[in-house]
Image (cartoon, rainbow, N blue to C red):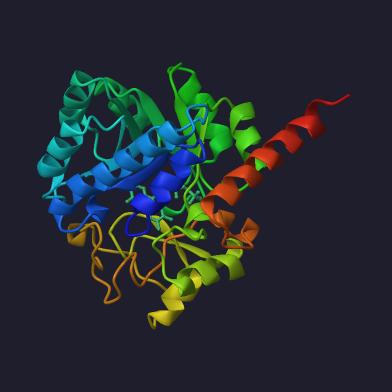
Length: 302
Ligand SMILES: Cc1cc2nc3c(=O)[nH]c(=O)nc-3n(C[C@H](O)[C@H](O)[C@H](O)COP(=O)(O)O)c2cc1C
């Protein structure tokens, strides 16, 4: 997640057995990306040496494939050097990225919000599709997961990663029941100790419910979900926001509004109403596993 995910979060996620991801753009200046990757690799290697039985998940780096991202070539080169196990691509179809990542044995998962985007990404040769469905935090689609997962399954048998307001263990089971292979969670992990979000942002997530999420293109030029409270704090009326001019799009800038997207205007999905605390990642992942198994027992015990 833009601004929020750094090495501390990713390391704890992978050590807890789930894939941790961060956008390359979070490492600033761009020269910081190489040491960030080194830090993650060293910490995971050390954890594995200390406890060889421990299940440690691979990590992923997100690349924004868009004309406004003038670091793409540099960041991709650094990821290739480190043989980053999974590259997540967002926005445009990742034609140029796939061959480079496959050459070292990495996987490419692409963010999509529609069947058309999914088909274009598959034509570009991606290994998996991240379906960003309605209610997801940050840039999100409007299609229900009940519609998008089965439609995509008609033509794609490979890995489907589902996102959109997944914030507890039973929702992870529901994603599996729908036909997804992985659940993809963002907002739930902003409210963890290791996330690089201000305390006010974490508190606002804990205090908010689904009705406090506003869907607008004003801040980046692309439609996304944000916390109402942060829009109020920026002096805007969340119920009367203008549409953004697409030509002003610049990932990470205000896109026409004065407040800065992501820093002042906080991204969050409709899962906020299920989030009541700010635990360490390890505690959260154990809880998600307990909730998942309890949901399975409830459903499958006669
Ligand atoms: C604050 C925030 C920043 C995000 N930044 C990115 C990003 O830089 N790149 C990206 O591919 N997705 C980004 N996302 C989307 C997440 O990767 C993910 O799809 C989404 O959070 C899942 O929905 P959920 O938040 O309801 O769990 C962001 C989401 C949030 C909440």
